[in-house]
Image (cartoon, rainbow, N blue to C red; front, side):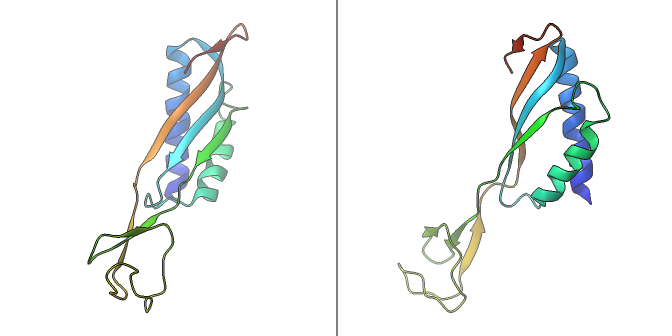
Amino acid sequence: MHELSLAQNLIEQLVRLAAEQHAGRVVKARVRIGPLAGVVVDSFGFGFDAVKSMFAVTCETVLELDCPSAGYRCLVCGREDDQRKPADAPCPDCGEKGKQFPVGDDELILLQVELEGEDGDKIAG
């Protein structure tokens, strides 16, 4: 399950950020998982929750996930739809059948981090 190692890497990154900013804890981490990233979102969240308790600075961190859906592009005319059509459904623009290709990013990106200082003040992140 590579989701666990991805979660471990994220936690390690959050711990480093907290240390660099002299933060007492990581309050929230917002992550975007692209539709073609090959990540099982529930497994990633489970792994994050399992690993975050290993560090005092992340033990209460809230994970917010942004998981956009994939789009689908006709390989003949380039029309994009946000829903996959059955293989026998013709493209509304060119009429070709079964020529859809999924599109979207394949990245896992840390979008935002909310840190709290050792004195309880919020630190911009």
